[in-house]
Length: 431
Image (cartoon, rainbow, N blue to C red):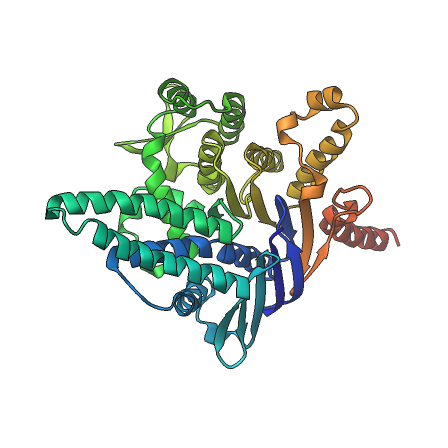
């Protein structure tokens, strides 16, 4: 199982966590929740950075030391995620993709990267494979005419790129896609008709990637979710889980209180057959949650295996709606054995997760009756779920080891403090 170890990074110290299907971080602002989730995403997405680099090597016939290049990629990536490493006094992070494949990042005087011997061995082997491939195709098609040679080499490269992707998936023990949904999403919806003029170079890397994904997905939503499901059923030969997709559709439209459609006239939220509001005039909650819902819908529809990080999915949402967003995230986890990391400030999110954990446990004893209360597609396995309270750079598990549920006092901590203050005032009033 993948594992993140942080000895020192920013405000975080002595953190060691395994990457399970669901990890929830709750705690005050600026406590380190986002830093942990971004760090996991950082290491998971290095696979794609290397894939892009190796493809570039093939296209441009580049020959350089891959591990030195990876160190440069990591340094640049840190700047894109957190700003220049020079602002951090000390960094010591290790990420285990498997027992013998890991990367260590350390900064004392300068930022350096260290790779496990098995990682180095496999990367250098792939580097040699690329060199051999380039030599082979040059010789193999040397007698072809220029146009025929170009087409033949293009086809060979396409097949080889699949091999590169498969090899990296093996090295990183990871065949998943990666998606980071940052906080502050409502700005994307509010500026929906001005996004093309936004200078994305001014944004951090995670927001850039998110914005690019949103812009690329809009054309897919030129019709309602029900029609998208119908089109997939009608036009594609491969079977898919239609009932789960329809379940997701129902949750999404209940949260949005309408149907989202993006067409030539812009993004609209239809609350009746012919009545709509432009998305930039919708409520803050609808704007904040819109692309969380739509991205989850596509991941569920196409059964794409992903690691998805959700920053504050409950933002601007009523407590009942927070429960529904947790249901949708649980549906995503169970669709393709997906991994989800949530950072939150909401006890309602913890309570909603707890209900789904409890349903799983009771469902092992009385499946039919529990299913009538909570759909089995939403149950969360306690063995694959972690929850942590993050404060002052430290983390503490808030899962009860015996029950597998989130401890009640962790959920109610804010309420308890508020109630204690009220009790003191009440006692003063009665003296």
